[in-house]
Length: 172
Image: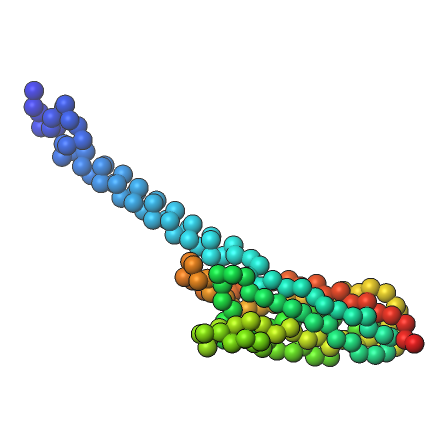
């Protein structure tokens, strides 16, 4: 009944099958770990829309300056880091010039000095050249910032794209 190969009734207890069983157990452990890590990484990198923004704009007369306000707020459950500072980059539009972009400032300070509280609107001064025709234009841009998730306890960098419409009217 018994041979050198072990008990035939319970083959998983034999000496010959232990290495294969350990290999399968090791493979399952590594696979489970890999799936767990990949799910965490995907949830961290797929976050979008941490900053909610809207644009308040008024028409800009040809040859004059105008002010556009970018009102931003941080979605609930996230914090916007002060360092490195968030930055806005805009693509130039022929006939229009961005004179200045005000920095991110706080309206209401946060409990934690490393993060922004409630944000003030970001002012964008725009100038229309005298040769610019009246019409609707649009600046394309992006906001680069660092944020932290309060619930999932991680921090990451994010880049969000912006579109700022500008209406140019004839000078009076």
